[in-house]
Length: 322
Image (tube, rainbow, N blue to C red):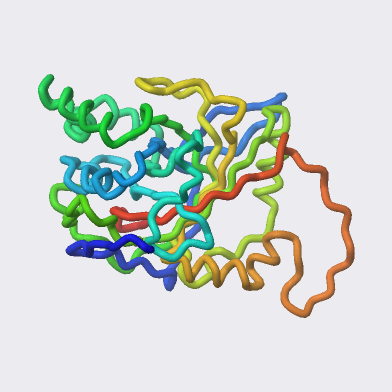
């Protein structure tokens, strides 16, 4: 049976009726592979992956809803949501994909987009980070650690990315905030409502193929901004040089790239997937159009891509989008 939900005081209303111009690259990752310049970074994306124990999902979400955070008020903040993993054939608000209890990527992900890496670094080194993570006192820190052990299976796993080719819409409205965080009621018994749908595809690309892989994405046809319900897209390149507490070297089983598309809801994603924009982006012609057979280029990854899907909740967006 589908889990019940609780309604927040303010639900995000994001629409794809207005699109922002293509973003200029604001900073460079100074990355090269085999002498080839990689794409410049448009954004910096910070994620943390959690494996929540079965039956503790609503308690985990309540901790996020009730936390002390000034996130949206910080310099360089662009976008945040908390993602809970779902299977495509699940009903909306169905809760957690049971396969993820053993998945290294976990079943929840915190997802924050920053304008530049320096903004993320300033947040992580500042008081706002300590406040949000219960580190304002030794007692608060210990209390947070004990609570985490009861809810989580294993330690969180941070992963950081260069955000490439960022596209986003201009939100018609943004949610109510209290000092930079969502004002949401969570009872710890029911999961929060889905406020967006997130489709990701994980790519396992050897470093020697990184340049060619990025160029294929750069040169592909995309009409995402024209699709109803589109919110944001970014191709994320793992920042393997990232350091900090809890950051482990990227394992061979982890993707080096990930595409991340945020939709207003699951229906918008399904509409795109069944429409001509999807066919054109994936090498097929528009409906009724005959395309000459073409030899597919050789794959640049070490194993096939792995799609993963999430419902996003506790959405926070800057006025100009992600």
